[in-house]
Image (cartoon, rainbow, N blue to C red; front, side, top):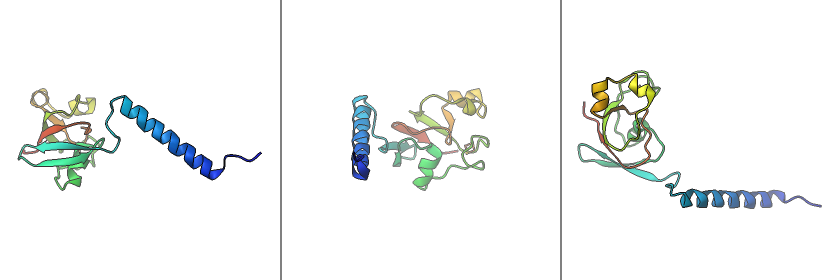
Length: 124
Ligand code: FES
């Protein structure tokens, strides 16, 4: 008896991917590679791929936050104010920011994952 062959395996893989995407959509999740609009305080609006860090996403739009650790969360130079969205602050950010900065919305751009619409102030 012959196996399913390479074509069968490819078709099975495509079917599996289609089912995974359908289930993902039924769960109300946004598509994996969709863009998210980020409003910069200076009235620019940029689209960034969902799941990227703010630091990388903005850099891809030629908006550069300072960084000397390459996004590792250890230099604290990528600070920016997230005024809407951005999710919960991470432990690594708490170690680099003062309580006052945190209360005013300061975050580390390298640690903020872009998951939904956000408003960001990159002015220093
Ligand atoms: S790039 Fe260094 S802490 Fe974010």
